[in-house]
Image (cartoon, rainbow, N blue to C red; front, side, top):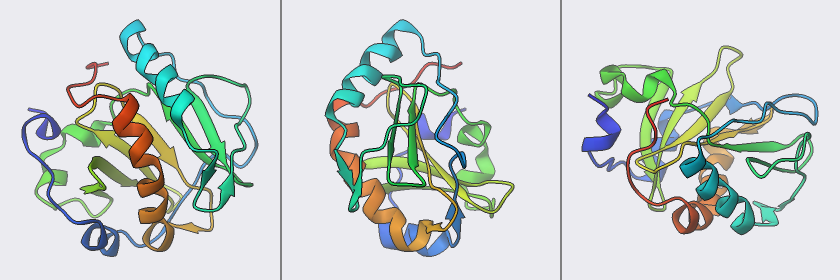
Amino acid sequence: MNIFRHRPIGLLAPALLIAVAGCSSADGGATVAVPSPDAKTAKVCRELHRVLPQKLDGRSRNDPGPRSAYTAGWGNPAIILRCGVVRPPKMVDPKVAEGGDPDAVAGGVNGVDWLMEKQGDGTWRFTTANRVAYVQVSLPEGVSAQEEGTALLTGLATAVKKAIPKGIASMR
């Protein structure tokens, strides 16, 4: 069972971010893998791209290559957003919902539910939950998930809520 489909996530942002100390990373260069969403997901991802902020926590928009309606970036090195990614395996892992996985935390920030995953290099990646499309945000090395994560996710929440309706994303 996908725990994100059936249970609201009620953690407050401060408690959530205290639990996730560390950094996240995006690709070191200015290129990223562009997702290949299905037609339904592509439509909401294009809408998200249209309403994303030009500045995110003081960082100017700096989209990676290749240019795509499914990717965006801010700053240098860039905070990278990818829309239409596949569901992360930990999204359906009961240990995450029960708080038993030290490398993944489920929680919400400003009305948007997120799965926060520690990557192999010690950085963090955030993926939306309970939305009709998965939106993934990766922070570059040196950007603290604990210190800056709330501001970044809060800065994206309005656009995500506007463009990506609540619901169940494709099972792919």
